[in-house]
Each structure stands twice: as structure tokens, then as C-alpha cells.
Length: 397
Image (cartoon, rainbow, N blue to C red; front, top):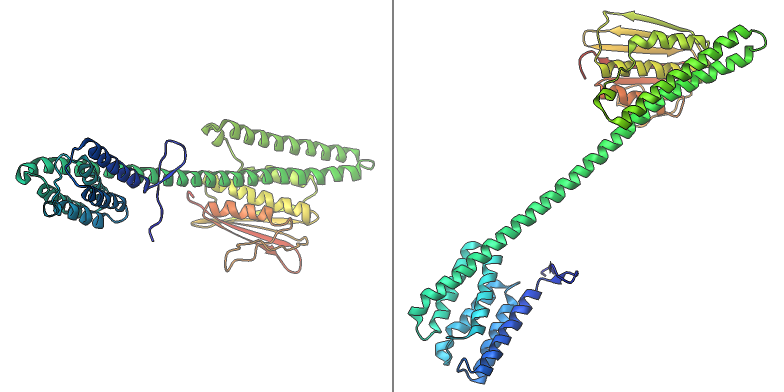
């Protein structure tokens, strides 16, 4: 069963592809009627009905059955001398024959179409009063029609292929744009979480500490409130820089200085002011880290210590840097109580990633580390406490 095809319409609605066959068959019949009224061809009524009827049927068949249509109209042409009718001066037979040749040029392989055109050339020339003299003229017309049909069809197919390619490229470009938007959304979410979660957690702890000692130790309370201001101001500065980069989209904003391991001592000062005890140790020969790796290392330390402040009751924490030949390993441990929550898509063989805050912070850390070519393991340490280990490459990610 052949699926219905459609062609453009000037009326805004698509027309079936057989519309052209129907129109050409109707035109052939109209030419025959005009010839009958004008007495152009000396055919009997029976000859006219049979010949034009068969030609019209062949034209209707040309779209789906071009081979059968060629044989049918070729037989009608070849039978002319035997049945007593000539094709000279018959516009109807000319229109029918040219429409079949057009279909051969558009719908069948080149070699088959050429053979079909030769068959029609020979059979139609036999139906003329001067077969030999008409052969050259008929050949010129028929092969010209076949060539034009072939050329236009090839051009149409090439344009259709270009349009299909353009649609595929557009769809691929849209998909890539959506993926880039999703990546950027994830990056912004991760940055906001790192900045806001850390700042708010420290501010809440410091504000609570200030409230608890406001009456007994006003000087310490003022220092704690000052630390709240400092933390909030720094968080606002980071947010302003981030938003400015998003609005401008400039490279200078994208290349603005980002925090790294060199900023960890300042981070520890703020956390110690809120009552957190942190020890830090370094082994191996320190290396200069790539900017992305340096930022990821800082965020790992920041997020881990923020979780200690929020969920471990400001229990003592330890940071250990271990520089190897090709990688930096960062271990953060605390003595608080961890409430494990599984995070999806943990790497096989790694310590299951758990989070004291629903998994968002540690999931963001893991994404950062993996983007740099590293790995992250995290989980509770029995009988209590929590451990985070990040392994980062020393070279450029």
C-alpha cells in the first residue's frame, strides 16, 4: 500500500500528490474535446473515446505505476496504424505523451527513464504519416522534456535534503543550547549554595552566640556581631560579583579572581570566631593548582566546615592536605554526629556519599570535583563524626 503524499497549495491547504495526475488527465480530455469540435483529427467517435480514454487512464497511473503507464500509452501509440487513426496534429496525444515522459524523468532511475522515452519515441513516430521525418522532431521534444524533468526533480530533492539537514542542525543546536543552559543553571545553583549556605550558617551561629552572651560578656557579643557583619558583607560582595558577571557576560567577569586554598586561613578565622575549633595539617610539597582545581578545593573545605557548623554542633574539625606527585588529597573530619542520607549515582566502590543537609551540598562538591577530573568520598565515621575526602589532580583539568 502506497502512503498518500501531499503537495503545496496556493490556498493554504496541502493537496494530494495525485492532484497533478488528475489535472493532466482532465487537460488531455479537454484538448481532445476541442479537437473534436474543430475537426482537427479525422477520428471516429469510437476511436476518439477509446484512444483518449486509455491515454487519460495512463496519465492517471503515471504517479504510482509509471512503468505500466508507459507500456499502456506506448501500446495506444503503436496501434494507431493498425486501427486506422493517426497522431498528426493531435494535441491531446502530445499532452498525454509528454506527461508520461515527465513522470519517467521524475520518478524512475535514469537508465529506465531513457529506455521508456525511447519506447514512446518509436511508438509515437509510427503513428505519424511521416514516421522517419517526425522521428527527429519528436526525439528533440521528448528528450528535452525528460531532461528538464530530471533536472528540476534533482534540484527539488537537493533542496529537500538541504532543508532536512538544516532542520537537523537546528534541532541539534537547540538541544546543545538547552544543555548549555542546564549546565549554567547547575553552576549558578552550586555557586549560590556555596556562598549563601556558608554565610548564613556562620551568621546564624555567630548571632546565636552573641545573643547568649549579650548580658554576661558584651565585648565578646560585639565581636560576634562584628563577625556577622563581616561574613554578610563578604557574601554580598561575592553575590554582586556573580550577578555582575551574569549580566555582562564579559570575559573579565568570568576571569575575576576566585577564592582558593590561599583563602582558607581567612575562612578559618571567621569560623573560629563563631566557636569552631579547626586544626589544619599539610604533608608533601605544595604545588600551584589550576584555577578551577583551586576553586574546587576551597569550596570542598568551605562546604565541609559549613556542615560541621550546621550539623555537628561546632564539634572540633581537622583538615589535612596531602600533596602527591600527581594529585592533592584533602581530608576533612569532625567529631560531631552525622545523619546519613544517600545521594544518588555514587561511584561504584567509593564510600557512599551522605549529607547532613539532604545531599545538596555534598552533591555540589562532588560535581565540582568530578568536573576537575577528581573524585569525592564522604560519609559518617563510626561511632560518630563525619569524613570528607576529595582527590584532585595537580595538573590542568
